Length: 138
Length: 138
Image 1: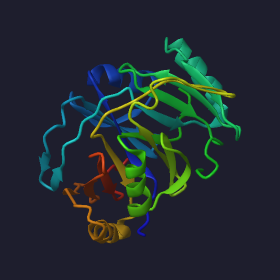
Image 2: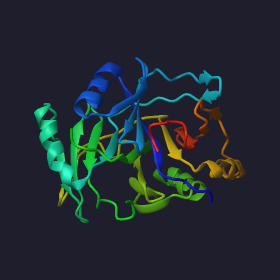
Image 3: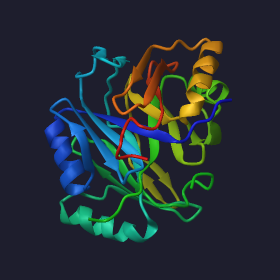
Image 4: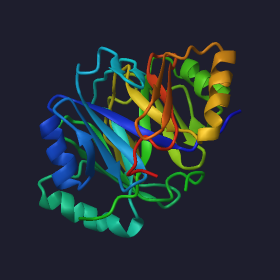
């Protein structure tokens, strides 16, 4: 079996890229690498890539000099999780609350990990998860 | 701004968890950590978590002793990307082809990275991406 090395890119489909970008940049502090009104790519602490696509904006193949990206699209409210250093979770809760983002759920996992859940502007369920939730994953 | 440490969990919503699991386990070799007919969690090389949820199976909050997971759901065909060591990409192409998985697209990126695109059983667009696509992301 050939090797994989984790997940590089996670995509969200949003109704309004500018509205979603304001949340992911101004509230969560993600670093924009490229983007326009149809699409934004963020570096998440230099380890992962979060992609925002306008819903219905990638229903046709994207043809570039180097090849073709086949079509894709999606509807939510989907779930994904950021990895958060355990010591940072209280600061995230204060930071999110200060920006008017409600904490919709909290979980203490059997292995000792902690999760906070909030909604982004499209209703996607965004988790802030510490180490310890998945013993097999660093 | 509090710190993040990458994306920990990426979720897909599928019509038939067993059918999707056969693809992700038998063809892609992912390691199942927990799972049942509604939900499976995979370790992707000990670095990321891929979650499969049965569509419509997480529309109610999940109440556990340690807290509550708010509801979520989704429809595709969404896009996500596995990170692949550059030297492994030819082996992935042979492996996928040998398992009857068609290569739907290929891209050579300006920075030198390479991508292959295939579909999972639900039509989700699965990319196998080497380093070099995103200069800001290791």
